[in-house]
Image (cartoon, rainbow, N blue to C red; front, side):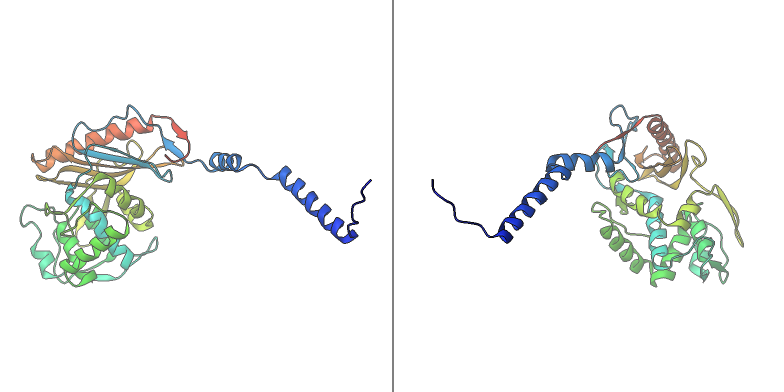
Amino acid sequence: MLSLPSVPHRVRTAVGALLLLAALTALVVLPRSDRGTAARQDGAPTRITDGDIPWPGEGQAAVTLEGSGQVLTHGAQRPVPIASLAKVMTAYVVLTGHPLRPGEEGPRIEVDRQAAHEAGVGGESTVVVTPGDRRTERELLQLLLLPSANNIARLLARWDAGSEEAFVRKMQRAAHDLGMRDTTYTDAGGIEPTTTSTAADQLKLAREAMRLPVLRDIVSTREATVPGVGRVANSNTLLGTSGVVGLKTGSTTPAGGNLLWAAKTDGTHLLLGAVLHQRAHTTPAEGLTAALEASRALIDGLRARPLSTGSEG
């Protein structure tokens, strides 16, 4: 019989330890495929179940359930005029540069002669203000977002950046940073038909806007009393119905009716949606009515659907 060379005791001990470690690892470590499945099951996002969604019969729309990573769209996602939805970006840029904490009013901003002169001129949505008055940042944001005052949009732009042109460049940079590749801003209020976007792009802005407590609080308010101006009403008449807690209306003849909205599904989930280009080339009033009606049907249909749990597709 052949005899094997003897193995030093310290080598045998090291080999034994390695074999024991391998055995223990095999017991506690899942195969790669099982580990992936377990991770997906533990962290699977809640999502909207697709199919039979009551989309608008015209224009374009997009919806998402906050936190799901899922975006559902309807209609061609091509840039169209968005009217006063532009004011959401105006507010976002102002609050990014001049943040307010909940309850804060912010700095006082002097109303210039241009803002006063523009009130009631050109058939735009405006509010009457007095030159020389000093309104707080929050008060001007209320006038911007509730009655949708274009003269206040331009006033805030001048205050923030020195000129509306410089401010619009900041709006465009913010859109780029948010990945809004199909969006072009050419004015602070949205009256120009060259201010365009898509429903899918507007959802990217809505997600960030609703993370700003002051903006979220303002857009959820049905009406407010602003010193020197009086009581102003929110143009979003869906507030307080169908779980709606925001966001912004917009309507012109070229844009038709538009609504960027936020609605609660239950106590924990937030739906975000955009409905654009409803009854375009009619009247702003007709377009806005159509956008509100189409949005209500879409929101109610989505809130009535069961949510699903699954990995992002």
